[in-house]
Length: 189
Image 1 (tube, rainbow, N blue to C red):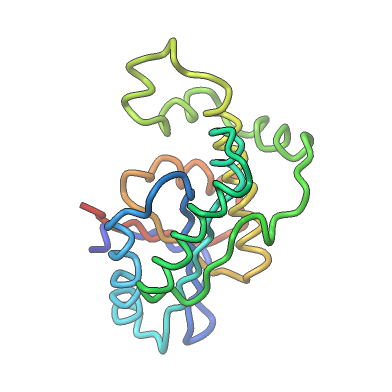
Image 2 (image 1 turned 120 degrees about the vertical axis):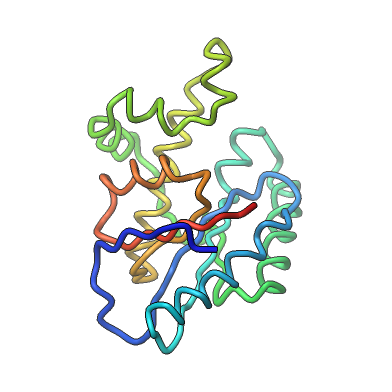
């Protein structure tokens, strides 16, 4: 399951706190079940007492991008919370519950530290193929997600993040902007 990991911060406790981020944009998918299973594998490999998997369900960005009413977004977000609880995630947090008000200065600070070529690499192939369909929501969405992860790492004292291998370029690029943390990539196919 674990494809590879990058260890940037020392595991100083017998308990590892990992964060997983997902957008509540549509119905929860079956691939989510692999994350709790992978954390158990990490615990065995690292000889840890426990690995706590925190889920961060973004209920803000999908609502903005899809122009959803808050009630509609809440229905989708509630499905994610229920599914992630059922799968055994340690804690589940809606982004709207822990991210402070966003200011443009925060995004500009991140934007100054990422090159266009780095951003290009983290785009899915479908976006690269149809350059005319690429809009600023892709850029702002990346910066928003980094902002969310920074808040999650700080507020929940995470020592690492776990992500699917298809998000590799996103998380490798985001590493430049985030506090030191371990990264675990898994194969979700």
